[in-house]
Length: 466
Image 1 (tube, rainbow, N blue to C red):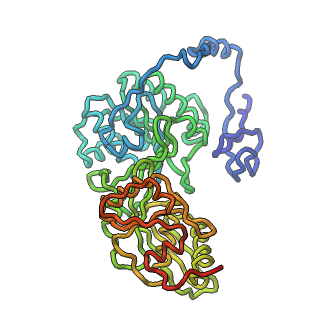
Image 2: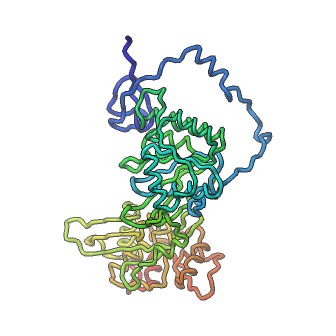
């Protein structure tokens, strides 16, 4: 009997090579090449079958001759999820949902199945990790045991396809894609080839039947979806669950969406009844804010079309080490170092012998540059030990020369600040052009960081010359 031929496949990018290498030539990852049995040789009989396969002889059409078809969307019954998806579940779409273990992926999708089943849709929940009884226990805990969606505890793709053809569901959840396998392939479930082929089979089923398919994906210790990178390219949308399991809030963020914006953010609160929507996210994030403490300031961030007020906190203390510590939670460490250098050079704050700690309350992560001025104000407030008034909000991008640059969607930010009772606002001076401030709100336009800190009462000297 001839010995089976083996190849080595990269678990990160899917690169194949006949011999083992320490470093993948394609993606540069180390020790990611895994040995697998090679696929059987391609025969001429297979070529004849391929020629007769449906869709293999498609014609090219002019773009203006392609018939228009409106995308059918179904409401999931969860407003925050519909927001992130772009308005609802699109028929025939393939959505990948990733996140850390225990973050709430299966809980949210079980609620989705229950809501859509109650609306009359046929829903199939395929569990490759849990038994049917375990899924029912979770559904009972969420109050969805009588919703009427179907549960299939199976990881054989052929059986899943057969049951899918029998039921013809409108929505199907596969939990998880790393546990599914095709029996005609020799590799183990979770391998690069199995994940790729199973996802391709589900994509074909979704497009042919018009069923919206949700795939649950495991993540690696670096936070990326496990399996080949091509998995994220194959699907129509990639959603990531963020948040610390020790905190009550969960953030659902779209990093890819062919049917909507990739900047939308959904906010949930984990409870015994499942994932509860947080409709007024700004109020929830500021509910436990310390009003009279130094080192705290409010800024308005934009997450897609949603303005969010967040509490930016800083703590500055004299260091006891040779080199001062710089620690940040929710902001980029490099950006923090840049802003501290600007405060020393352009404002004259003494920070070279101070430890600086930054925290964004509620587990939020600020990536937009509009948070720069709020970070500077929080650091200056803590260093001077002077509290910023509780009705102040600050926003603006800071350059290396100490200038304050304009921010996007200033009108929406100002309206959100006014809605929650912040009557004093510091914005870049350029944003004052055409800005309609609500009645009773005081909006201060600044050109430099020094002007902003002076308006907040954090500086008691004339402007330094550097």
